[in-house]
Amino acid sequence: GEDVEQSLFLSVREGDSSVINCTYTDSSSTYLYWYKQEPGAGLQLLTYIFSNMDMKQDQRLTVLLNKKDKHLSLRIADTQTGDSAIYFCAERTGANNLFFGTGTRLTVIP
Amino acid sequence: DTGVSQDPRHKITKRGQNVTFRCDPISEHNRLYWYRQTLGQGPEFLTYFQNEAQLEKSRLLSDRFSAERPKGSFSTLEIQRTEQGDSAMYLCASSLVNTGELFFGEGSRLTVL
Image 1 (cartoon, rainbow over the protein chains, first blue to last red):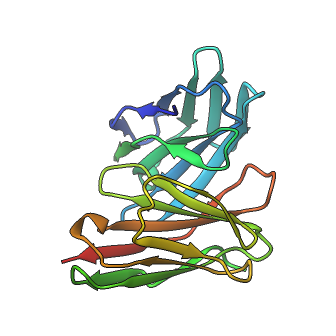
Image 2 (tube, helix red, strand yellow):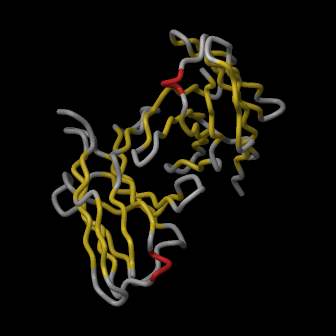
């Protein structure tokens, strides 16, 4: 079955880069996602990557996918206090729903 | 269109009462999903529709839960005889078929006393 794991907490200083990691188990994943959730709010789609890609860059965000190791990472360059939130990794398999990790709480220290 | 909207944003009810949540997806999105999120956890899939057809239901969706999308546009999620364990954030998402992007609403938070 599907299992998505993330570390629970990450703290970085403002201006540094943040790297949030995720591992998943289902090798049939078609898409892998990163969502951001601020307190009391819904999920904001940050970026996603198709499983046949290794990397995707979008402004300050860089997604790396190692399909062999089933490892996904999100790098946020020049992290700002507004980036403080919970970041969820999710995988989508042949079925049409997403399986989410438990989220990584990113704290940016001014 | 400003995105997926959900109503109500918050609902407090007593155990045993019925509640209904509504989701309006992004216009022309033919897929609509319901997820549940409890404190400290990631969202868990409940069910999804393609147009008006409910194509998949999770085992989490007990007999007390029913979802509809009668005209292929908005959807409702009803919980009958609510229990304290139903307290959670209920999230709706929508997408086009065969695209990677799922867009979520702000959620409907249910508190069962």
